[in-house]
Length: 253
Length: 275
Image 1 (cartoon, rainbow over the protein chains, first blue to last red):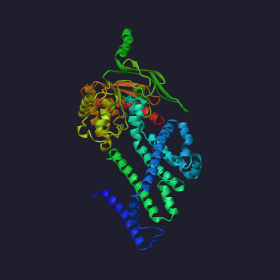
Image 2 (cartoon, rainbow over the protein chains, first blue to last red):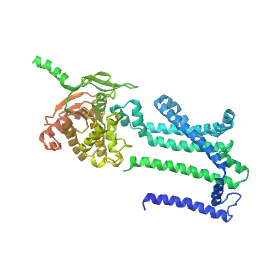
Image 3 (cartoon, chains in turn cyan, orange):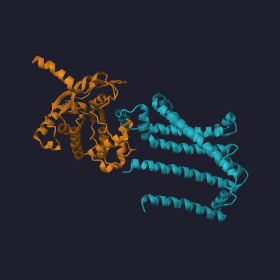
């Protein structure tokens, strides 16, 4: 067995072991079933929920909101990052702001967004966007900073026009950092949207979790929580695999 | 006698592949730095010219100026009868000291890169890339990525990427600077081979005196900053030559001459007293 396979196997064993332990503790009533239901019940409850239209509507709403927020934040974050990179003076002015960006508790502005845009998906897109954009800006700046000077020189020696140079040399060169930006933007969009739905909205997975919580409906609440968790892990895992695939050829010694 | 002296520069003007006159580079800033010149240089078509000089004397600046990567503060640079002014002219290729291979492309795609961007048709690209891959001994590595290759092999990829564009003037900025001595000698042989076969003019910047002495028709010795040529030595080697030349007594004499010219300049460059 290779070292990597051993590490993966250990990781899976830890997760499975944790779930089994939780199952036993719940079944033996060491953990009160009013506090937490056994993982197997979460799965069966979720399975039943898949039979009703309600969960599909929630999924559609949450995912379309996350997707919109993600696409907007990546586009704007990249454009802003590239612009700021090209303007060193602006860069110096906003660098400290970017560094302290995530110390701001954005969710305090959420009620304001609802007052501005109404109780619909717009405030959710905005909160996800605000949350995710800075990560993309920072990653873009990081990536562009790390394009070796010799790459830019090479592009010029090969007589590429500026657009070509950016497209075929600068972007691929900065790609690993841009990819980190994509990963963070996706995670932050997801967090922003679900949390927003949780606080106040008319639908979506976050809303349904909050609704079930207020309704003392543990079956639904835990089933949805598990679903959100699994989706987050799967999305991140997929991006990770893709990233590994891309970086392998760059780093294999 | 006076007629001959008057005619000599004219002959040089007609045949020079690249001609520098009064080329000066000053980097403006809070402290403006006079990096280079004024210096004059005539590169004959097809000659192998090396530049040696103490560190920080403006060797790379000189190369950037000839390549058109930056513009001189004063003076003129003529390449193939056209002025070079901060834009890379057609027919010039360059290889740098740092690894400039594209890590996201295979060896083959790295080499084909310039041709594809220039819109050359696919069959012609395949033909030229195949030839250069064979010429540079990269046949077994065409599908490898740079990260899988040694530093020497990666530099070969960069040289191949330059060669495939068939430049008439090849600028090399310490291309073997990061390689070990044995690899450097071998790469030197390859460089001589490609120089002979392509007929290109080569300007090699190096800090290795033996490398300059072994490879070049002429070696320009630069002063400490601001860099100027304090002497240009003609080695007198035959066009058919290789690294075996290091055993020639004349090789020792050339290297010694280079060092005697450079010693005091190098001391100046490191700020030593009594230089």
